Image 1 (cartoon, helix red, strand yellow):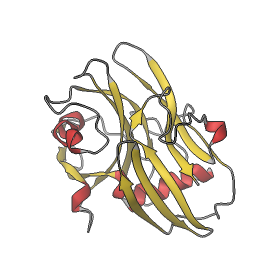
Image 2 (tube, one colour):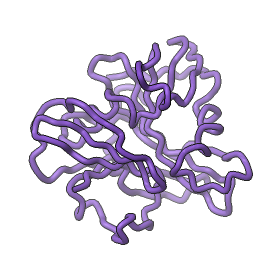
Image 3 (cartoon, one colour):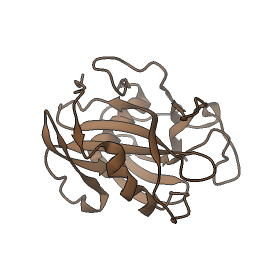
Length: 225
């Protein structure tokens, strides 16, 4: 399991995300001011090779009339990821590990492979800020045959106002995933339905907390037909 280093990051993660977030197609702000970000929750996954940090971070933007919670899956690498320049969020200096390249994880095959493993029950979600501590609050399910084993390849098909759609090649064929970017348990799906986890083919569900203490819970990622 990955060790969490409680050290100074320069710049910090929220500082890195502040200029990046408004340029994303799923950002709901008006564009007239900078986001005011606070950490709202999330979890980590382990890279079996121990090389890439994987984090699903929920951040709350309080710059508008009401806070909006965004999901930003991120990977942390010790060297640039070839061919993924468009997905680079930025770089930071880690006191223990040195320079780290931070990517939008939906473009990183290591994160997508571990998300697929989590859906199958082959990866265990970890606490965001504690070492060697499973996060039991994160739940997952999958109905149907996935084909055991690692994801073979993944492609970002589209990133729009609702989320980021991926096609994952597996041993059993293609799997369509959506990473939800705006986290709102009361928000309906783009097709007009408001499915709960039991109505989805598969899901990874977790919670978040707003600065005022309000808690929410909903799918971070879903398997789509």
